[in-house]
Length: 189
Picture 1: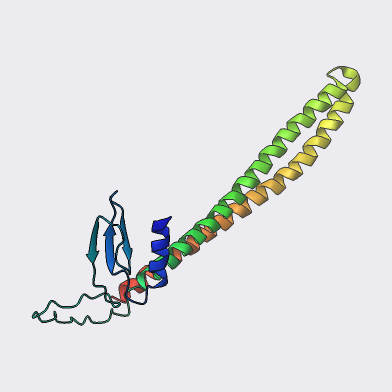
Picture 2: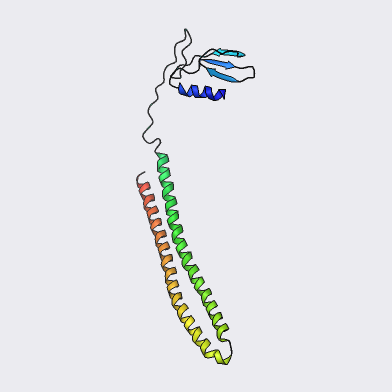
């Protein structure tokens, strides 16, 4: 609790001269305060200057101040540029993943329709049986099922081709953009 109070007081007076006394208690606890230590095992008076530079020792000249040139304009700009490139990479990857997912979804829908077709044929066989009395009805049911699922198959194949074409076009566009960027970078050197 006492150390929290000391830290709070130190933070409150950050702009002015900070702690001036370092007090070490009997249990080894160290505290800093602006008033002399009371009942401490040891006390050390500190000289703290607000700007953080200690005063020169008596008779010793102050060390020279070394002026540093300002950082070039490019310093500190590499990180935002790298962040933008990384963000653009993740965005492109997200776009490509979405296109791949569209292909997988179209393929999964085609597989689902094939499974539904097989179930519909099995249900028709169960309903009409394999005997001669239901043969014509079974044949008509299977013909209707095949007609329906053949039409769905054509639609599914078109969706798959379309999704694959979009993915291939996207890949070609990205390759062309990368080649153009590489050529631009090579010409600027």
